[in-house]
Length: 101
Image 1 (cartoon, rainbow, N blue to C red):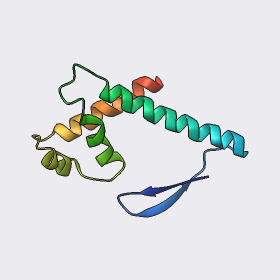
Image 2 (cartoon, rainbow, N blue to C red):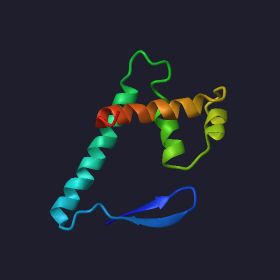
Image 3 (cartoon, rainbow, N blue to C red):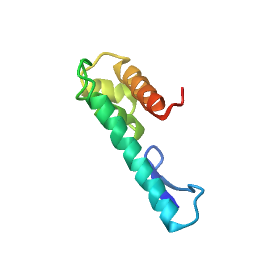
């Protein structure tokens, strides 16, 4: 079982990965970490993207820290709806990597 904190509400939620033995669980966690690192590298490695160095951090502020898109726009000094569009773009990159499109 993996415990995660839901940033928006501060509640702890148990997620069952559907795996029962510890070896498989460790493989699952390693896969999650690899997927995340591949996604982050893909976002930051897009040389032609004008916001390549902040797009990952801005998406994580919304996904992981529960910040609003308006807050991210304001702190990054971007016009609305930059943060929302950035989040959608970042999630689309992840979906393409996972072949979920």
